[in-house]
Amino acid sequence: MGRSDDAEGGRTQSVTSALLSGSTYRGLAEQKLTPAEERFERARRTVGFVLAPLVTIVFLFVPTALDSSQQQLAAVLLGVVVLWVCEPVPIPVGGLIGVATIVILGVLPADDVLAPFGSSTVFVFIGAFILAQAMLRHGLARRFAFRILSLPGVGKSTWRVIVALGVVTCVLSAFISNTATVAMLLPTAVGLLSVIAELIRGQTPEGQRFDPLRLRVGIALMLVLAYGASVGGLLTPIGSPPNLIGRELIEEATGERISFLQWTITALPACAVMFAVLVTVLILLNRPEIKRLTGVEEYVASERAKLGKLSRAEWNTLIAFLVTVVLWVAPGIVALVAGGDSAAYETISNRLDEGIVAVVGAALLFLLPVNWPERRFTLTWTEAARIDWGTVLLFGTGIIFGTLLRDTGLAERVGTGLANGLGFTSSVSLVIFAVLMAIVVSETTSNTASAAVVVPIIIPIAEAAGVNPFIPALAATFAASFGFMLPVSTPQNAIVYGSGAVPITKMIRSGFVFDIAGAILIMLLIPLMIAAVGLGG
Image (spheres, rainbow, N blue to C red):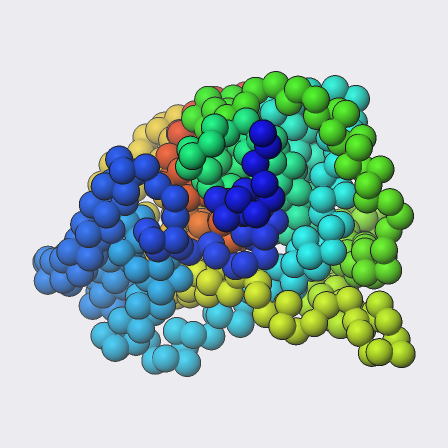
């Protein structure tokens, strides 16, 4: 006898419903855990309550060569990282506690500390989350997911679905910003997860725990989206802001120009190998609950037939989505045609700021009607307000800490101190240091801030050591995009973490492994490709 819909609904919930609820940061009582998982979670969170203030207080009074403001910032940031990792309080609250502590300690005035929260990236989150909310609510995300699953061969296994989503992400992020790419594809990824979760639920024995937000396949799907964007963003100079920052600093220091083609040829082998490693790592660490998606092709065909024609709400959502994507892509097209250093590109990129574009796209949802006589529009504010504000707060605090690291000089002080202490004499040792430093910095701040902090440190160190700064500086530029362990490391990490399908512990584990793999690949492949292309001569 089949299980009734009511019984099934009481036992679990669909992934889409869970995502629409905004339940990213869930307490122990809100999750379905095994006894072993619950013991681990309780221990982890209890340790955080004690360790976070202890680490902060101890570091405040440990004698160091740092300035007072730098030492206070370092102490608070160490405590906040503990709060983020152990989750004794919801992760966004941990960031807010850190920001408040910095002001109370007098590191900087409140207005100066909070100013970075007005960053354009924060508005990318708000606009993209509202668009995703509409795509989920009206079923457009599910329609996109079925379209991908219906591609020849893709719907036969979970690993093919993961690879397909990763490839699409990588290609798009080479020309559109990583953040915009992930924001654009998140609803499709959620739709894919929803479909696969339904199949897994159907195979779950009666009485066995099932939580659609704790599926290993969900972790792999979301992380291939976030990490794939970072990998693809390395392929072109316009793929990610750190690329443009690093290229400009290198050209100023060496007088050698890196063309669009030279950059792409240099990056292509590294990106290809990185993507293969990424997929392998994610699938091995997060083995999907089911490997073969038996009956999926028939199921997909049946569900697509049920969807019928696009509804008015879906059409409106699609229009808003396409307008946003076109405006996001426009600067990249201008860069390809006129060049990344042209006046036209500078004008377009300044006018079509990603955050403003995201807000414009979201605003269209409140302007496009589904029933004009009744004045009903595509999305209501009640529906839009259910977006994950916690992730918006989380990344906002991450931007604050990244700005403080730069403005107080703490990042530069630590970097130069390490460099002087280690005493570099060869290009190899400096490349290793540059890559590791860029990755470590990018874990606690944005990749853009990481490039802006690390590359200017590496260039003078290389010159002082009599080493050509080209290779270590370019390696640091690439490594700045490798921050995968925490939601605040990159905007795309925060966006997929906001889906609720990626526990912090799983992101840390997968991110740590890929950080190590990525560091090794950059150290080995970038110097080889620079030599092959004839750069840095």
